[in-house]
Figure 1: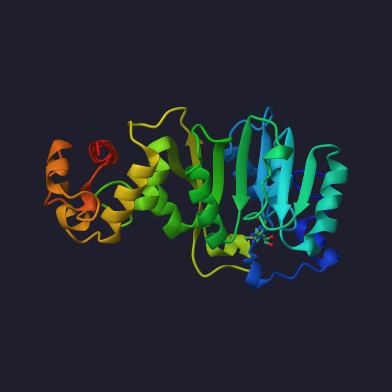
Figure 2: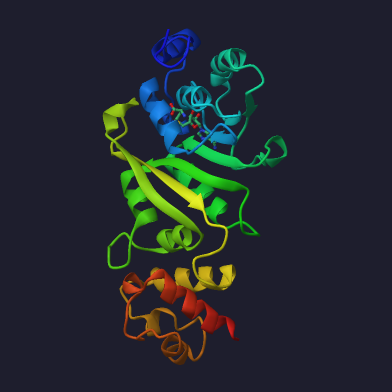
Length: 280
Ligand code: SAM
């Protein structure tokens, strides 16, 4: 019996179902159920929420989310070998776990979820970053999710929460912090995982804000920020040359020195610039 439920320990689950970790699927499993319950607690009050979990694997975090009281967990897993292990969890928590086999990048889970919805995942890092960008740039705001609680490699987590003036400050920070509160809530060493990855990891928690922190058109802001950070060592008047013919005037109208660099510019200034550029 495990620490958080009466299901077998994860090492036993992995041995029973032959779930040797596959590198191609980015499989680094969390086997400590106290730790997965702790991650689940970072996701906020789960009792009144549906939780979308991407990449449950053998189900460590899934069990954490369910034992912490999630109303329902919808788990999307690409590796069919994990399905029997996940079915055992579904039996233990009747009506509260639904598993979809498939690629999270191709499945629209919304038909199966009832708001409020929280997202929790320990995913391969490349898939995680791509999904994060999608979740941060929906056609309308507020998004379908109330919060995202996601494991990243430490360096990516730092890029999400970075502040102006730091080397890690860039497009991801502006995108994440414009319409969400983002913070690192847990740091994990490589040996928290089986097998251990090469680098440390961190869990980032993002809460969706009802409104953006500063007014701006999402598409214009995204274009300006991408151009500014594409040439982050250049002064903004050079980096943004293609954005508007009179970009130097627009920078000044937004209260920004044309000789500044993207790395120094706070979120508020990027939004002011996006508003100036949107004037046409
Ligand atoms: N959540 C489990 C844990 O914490 O132990 C497994 C984490 S492991 C880092 C990532 C999981 O995501 C694996 O089970 C893998 O098969 C799954 N996965 C990888 N790519 C995926 C994709 N595109 N869609 C859904 N699941 C995916």
